[in-house]
Length: 185
Image 1 (cartoon, rainbow, N blue to C red):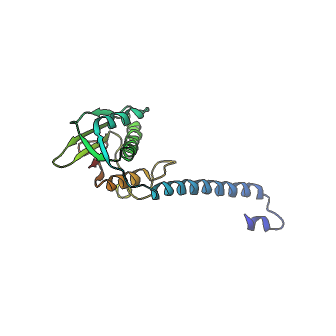
Image 2: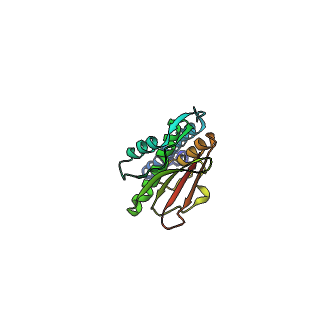
Image 3: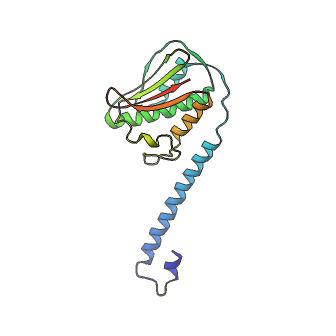
């Protein structure tokens, strides 16, 4: 823009070029602001404050928060785990939100449930959306395929689960359409 405005005489379309340039600057500044805000949230993740958490009411409460498409809750056994309730809730909100967004594309469903394994609790969120197109970048910070997405939801979720000594995995459904997110704690 500086070079354009320094030209004498000004080109006939200088106003249009200036408006277009300012629009690019504005959109890049907004994107940078979103990036910095997302980065700050990611960098400031506090250590989990562990306390006994009952899985059933936690999952039922979080599932009820989603109003666009009510997830189906598959009840598992009565389980208590040592976790930071707020952080675990945030992970479930992120995973259910992702599942619902995928399921809405295909008029599908989202199912949330849990089970006990030998030494762990496994929580799953399954959707019948289109599935994962690019699994290589799922946990790359700030990578997103969603318009307006920040690209930190899955990264933050994984960090939270790993800080709890657990594991978060995502995979396409082996039995058909959709995706499964699995938390092992």
